[in-house]
Image (cartoon, rainbow, N blue to C red; front, side, top):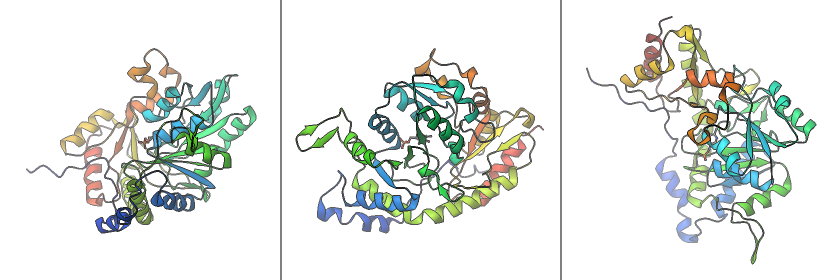
Length: 371
Ligand SMILES: *Cc1c(COP(=O)(O)O)cnc(C)c1O
């Protein structure tokens, strides 16, 4: 028997080669490779339009964007966030000298449980940083009402939520700011890249200064800023990928629907179906294997590996359980997040994944069940 072709958990979207070459050709005339060049400005304009936001600032990656917005808002004290996320969310808070306070998530979509937020607020709390996990949108209305009542900033980690809308409203407009990641593995990529979307007009200049060493004038440097600018080649990749994005999302939709059709209703299989008022981006295919399934998440992962299919324990471990935070947090205080982290597996998901491969993956998953 021959081994079936390897299927990775994701596959980066790329434009036709010639289209990219055409996009970067002008750079050989201008010799302007970074520092808010022509491609950078064009991508900002295109993304403002696509995401329907008042303003946007581009970054070298999503993580730097997150750190930069914390700096630009000059926050101090505690930030309420969740541990069911990628390292970046928690690390950004800690690296900026702030203290994360972990709120549990909701069992149906793994986003912050807004009913628990107020019990975590004290006089040192300055902000809330919720995560739109897998592109599932947070309960933004409830979160922002609490934030408003207590005078807190809301900064969304929207790395998974590019293009997602709720009742036709772009999720990028939620809160005081939303961070997007354009990493190669995301729905929309600039190879590496990221952005902050916001409405406050004062924030644009501040973000641009913080991402460029805190330089505020020809001979003035007012902040201890870093370097987090997006270069022209990355911006050009973004311009090309954006032209094909709707088509890519439409293909992802077919893949997602095939998975849901095959897996929905299987005992002990918990899927993450989009809510009725949300237009999703089909970024990930998370499956939580409850005890009733009869096989553990790790057993499913091994069965898939034996078929040359790569899945990912995303998110495991909780950020509050990372070695670098040993002794600082207590993950038993976020039991819903801990439960999901022990049981979740994200299955391969990308626009060009063949439906026959989805069937093969689902067959393997379902065959491990002892329900
Ligand atoms: C990808 C990701 C980030 C970080 O983005 P980079 O562009 O890789 O720096 C942050 N948060 C979440 C939830 C992510 O998935």
